Amino acid sequence: MKKLYGVVAPIITPVKENGEIDYASLKNLSLNLIERGCDGLYVCGTTGGVAYFDKEERKRILETVWEAAKGKALVYAQTGGTILRDTLELTRHALELGVDGLGLLTPTYFKLRDEELENYYTTVAKSVPADVPIYLYAIPDFAGNDLSLPLVTKLAEKCENIVGIKYSSGDYERICRFKQIRDGKFSVLVSSPAVAHSAFSIGCDGIISGACILFTEEVKALYNAYRDGDVEKVVRLQRDMYRWLAHSWPDEMAKCTAFACHEGVISTDAMRAPLMQLNREEKESFLKVMEEYKNNLSEGYGRV
Image 1 (tube, rainbow, N blue to C red):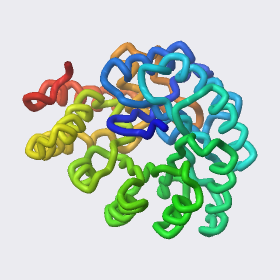
Image 2: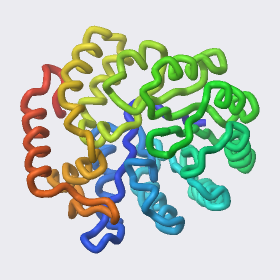
Image 3: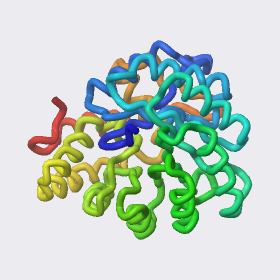
Image 4: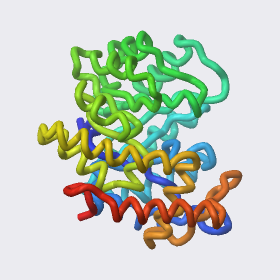
């Protein structure tokens, strides 16, 4: 069972100017992120624009990333969504490919009771072999549903293959409580390097964030410092990075896309409608910040 760890990029889904998926750029981006130091790729998550790609497109997106990355980095397929039947189909497809594990976003739109969320997750978890690792995924500000501590605890007790959670929220107390599940063996990944020091100090396993696309080498340096037990360096790197993270919001997905295009990794900075790319002023301002950032990296924190 291959659990998530380290620096995991929630890979964006490049599209052409006409809005169709650019599979050649997607393959190139997958390889680029691995070369820059990502330990894993998380496919069809929020940063991947999952809400705007249909079921068949999601299958081909995963196939493209898996073909490029298998054996080089962990590949997790985010198969969750609003329609349970589609989630089960996408999950079967991911298992047929042989991906390393699954992420499961909460259903969206309707506010669901814990009992309804429990049924959703249990149904999916019981549909796959017990040795397939599943990470719950909650991003309540976007998806509208949250995962409570009692619910996550219950799911971990009922389903041995639910091994962890990607929790995209600022509720640090809840993150601490999640980490105590299964006597501290429950895997927890956070969504921002801004909380890395605090998260790592309680045993969190890594970061899944758009920052892992923008600042791959820098987040990797932070993780390596934590792994090596260099607390002073972790604090310094996080402090230096925090000055720049604020510039990745709002419009993080569009900024990740603009940056990848600027670096020559993908062919255009187009977005799938109704999302919009950065306008000229926004793009110039953001790319200027990125250049300034790269020129002001701390010692031991630069690109390699």
